[in-house]
Amino acid sequence: MNASKYIYLDYAATTPMDPLVIEVMNEHFRNSYGNSSSLHSVGQKAAQILVKSRETIASLINAKRDEIIFTSSGTEADNIAILGAALKNQNRGKHIITSTIEHHAVENACKSLKKKGFSTTFLPVDKYGLIDLNELEDMITDETTLISIMFANNEIGTIEPIKEIGEIAKEHDVIFHTDAVQAFGKVPINVEAMNIDLLSASAHKLYGPKGVGMLYLRNKGVREGWGKYIEPIMFGGGHERDLRPSTVNVPGIAGFAKAVELAKEEMPKEIERQTKLRNKIIEFVLNNIDDTYLNGHRTQRLPNNVNLGIRFIEGESIVLDLDSEGVAASTGSACSSKSLEPSHVLLAIGLKPQEAHGSLRVTVGRFTTDDDVDYFLKKLPPIVERLRKMSPLKSN
Image 1 (tube, rainbow, N blue to C red):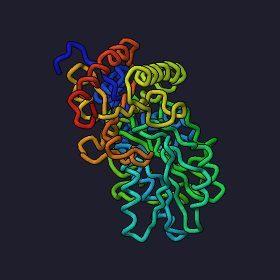
Image 2: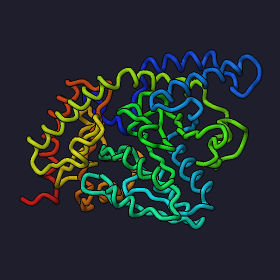
Image 3: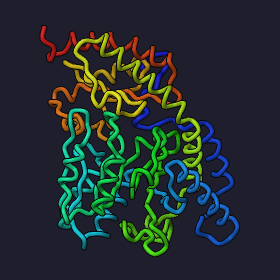
Image 4: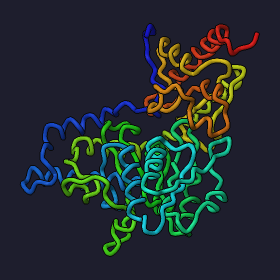
């Protein structure tokens, strides 16, 4: 990197920790070292921190405190939800419905169940990345026990009709899980109003620490409890009600809770501010750089997400040149960035492999300024022009 300044525009991959989160975690690293399962006062102090953290995190999505299970990541939460729900309800049926644009944590968890006799329907999406609700309902059979549709796509930012999906699932007595890793803390979520039974989230997507996530698990009351929805897929001690056994990361969870507290306070303002930055990028690129287009829905998308198709050059080349100019962006999911295969999400919305390779994902965040966006928009056009001159894909 040769630039004198560096601008981070890859918030969908991970976020920098908020200084207030770091402050809280440092305090707990020093003073909250007890095992929350221990009976002595040091352990009980840690246990109280978990109680308060559950309350804070639950409040963001209108859940109850005891419906929050802490995990090590959104990926782990996805796996516990899908595998646990499928296995718990296999006597009712072995059919799962998901979409063709899910994160690999969901996609591969569903595929793994094939060895146990399960079948999965992968619902197609339209050119914007939206599922068809009528098609979803048509695919439900007597064997269907689980629907898993992500809240918002991590690559193209499209937000799915979650409330309507929840209504369909409830009507057919099917469990509804949503991977909300990208949406959690960015847009309003109400698990009651949206009829969500299981929801996955991760701290590092909203200015919290890596290595901490959570699973919301609807509790129907004392008699039913968690039992209707899920069974353990991991075994050990009795932590997290036996659903995620392992000594819990108290400082990390406290940091997660602080990040949620800040997100709740900042959300209305940040939605408005980031949407303006997002739209500024979209409008500038589409109006000033030829042969470009937007991937995902124009308005029904995350406030911070821009995914651009730039014809005749590969996204990786743009990312590397932007990096040399002091700008961090990506071509799509960080989890797939080392793969040479085109994005399964972009293929699913109808792009050809060559087009899918020419994508650029730019995601803004809490610390992104107008000047940052202006700098990016100043650097992008000459990079595109230079790469196209060298590209064998560009016809003269």
